[in-house]
Image (cartoon, rainbow, N blue to C red; front, side, top):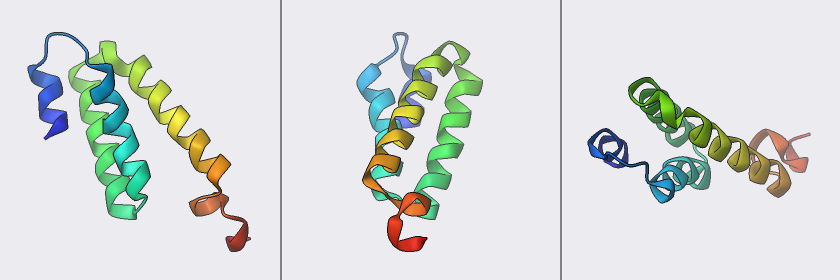
Length: 78
């Protein structure tokens, strides 16, 4: 639903961008991240001017993932 909102807005909503990225990383399941990737790809294809903001949010989310040691960055999986 949030992704569809992007297409309807005339002004970029930074909170929406944050949650569009943060929610898949918070759930951190294969299906959630996969859906997130599809959503991000669609947003960038539809609104290329949002790419830098969206990629910055994605980079920040990965940084948090690394700092928290989640997924492949988990110390227990090494």
